[in-house]
Image (cartoon, rainbow, N blue to C red):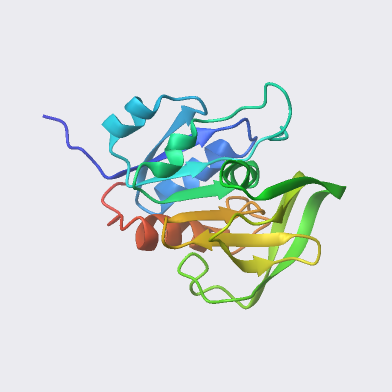
Length: 198
């Protein structure tokens, strides 16, 4: 008889860092599985994930043939975290505004927290991050609060009522030194995973 661990599902939109997201989640003691971006909603329901993470990716959400998951993924009743492209896709689905950045932002940046949140709990007020995006969210979707921003873009948003969160930067890479804490906050505090896997 197999033991069913708590799990988090990661949807892969083509990011070079998707495997690293999974590693960070597992380091937090939470089992996770990577699935293609177009995994069926039925499959996700059968997995009974405690949360879902939408990875980054090189596409623009408006491009013809850009990878899109089903919008229903955002309405499964579990917390969702979008990273970079994942945040842009959430914004695209929920009425925010995604625009090309004045310049592709690739490299270090600094983000300042603008209001308290569970996602960014125990983080410094200002911290270094790694950005890698050509598009950015110019206007967050209705109901979302901007909880952190850089000089050039919003850094993080949340909709506590719907349990949907987004990061423009990459918390999984070593260039975001405190990023592990953010992912741990998501899986342990927001998704209520107990960390029963090693």
